[in-house]
Length: 454
Ligand code: UDX
Image (cartoon, rainbow, N blue to C red; front, side, top):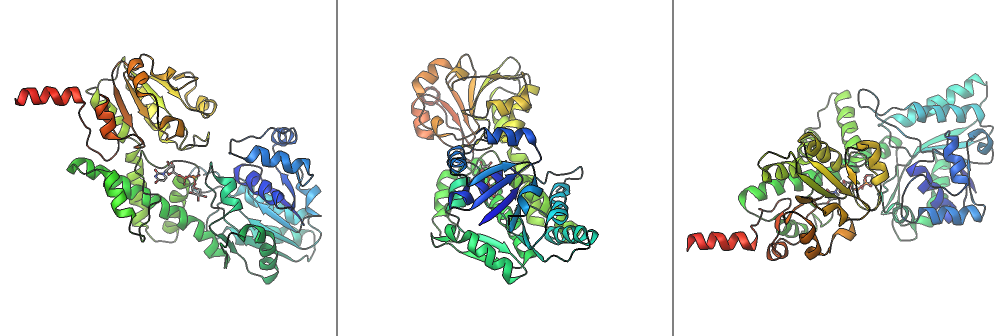
């Protein structure tokens, strides 16, 4: 079986690599010639654990190839996946021009039955537009070729995308014909061996499922962040509260970790898109509007803590930053809380020494030479007045606190991801501030207060 995947970005490459891994012949197409040349030379444009090895392995077995021409591969492919980008246009809604351009090219170049599957995250109702675009081109050619469209949203997490694709919780497919259902069932069978289902449904529901899933997850995060902020005010510890509520299986332990707001290419964009879809249909998604508002303010919580520690004057202060990407295991900086926090720090006159295991190059596109990029995590601490942890990379979790104390001007840590233990930090003599927990004084400071009381 041979398939074509149009759009060799994050989703397209992971999809192509994983389908080829189970023995399907895959051609990944992209209009970007440089990207295709690079891929053909084994240069992978994104960082995703396991992807490079999987691509190389399957290229060697001749099951995976890269091309700039859909016209060349479409005749042998019964199924064409569309996984091109849908960047927000000026008014924030998803720009469908690339998706529809691929649909039209399918209509212009196909000579027999095709199943055209939309994998890009697109607003509800897009598959019908895809169908119309293909049909219009066929009409121009005065051809009556049968075809189907389908919606097959992806639920891949960056940093774990290969695993998510190979062992999915579920596969959601929206179709309107038995032929399409059979084809997708066959294609996805190897990925359902872990017992998780392919859920077939109508196309609009499949499109909606993608948004509803991301909106639900974003809601969990904004909810816990809101509660965390209240915990701090009333003197509760969100880490305890999280465990306390998470052990109720109806709530669950996942996705209730407080932090500095969700980022990435999906949640912010999809929450906004769903709010828009609702308002276009004269409905107001009140919960999601609050989710977005909480997230916007949460991105500033850590900056506000740092700013008030230095009594509102950050001029001349150096802040060490550990972690720039929006989450660990990726170099993706899209909508990363670090963007907002560092912008505020710089505007307030601080100097930023930043370290990230993989995102420094990406960060340079955003910050240029306005911050110092460090090669190594401890280097960032040299001469810094405090440390701010913005991404919970594993290598930050058990650092050498003694060396850190020696390198920092002051033993002050702002932990935006709650990765350290407040008692331990306290005992080590750090002034430690995290999310949803009242800042504890250092041992030294406590002794001082006791002396005063005494
Ligand atoms: C997400 C969805 O999980 C995935 O199913 C969808 O296809 C695309 O969007 P991704 O953007 O890769 O995936 O990141 P994810 O791991 O879900 O994290 C998103 C953001 O939420 C990150 O900024 C992360 O730090 C934050 N987060 C996550 C929290 O703040 N707390 C949590 O408990 C979980």
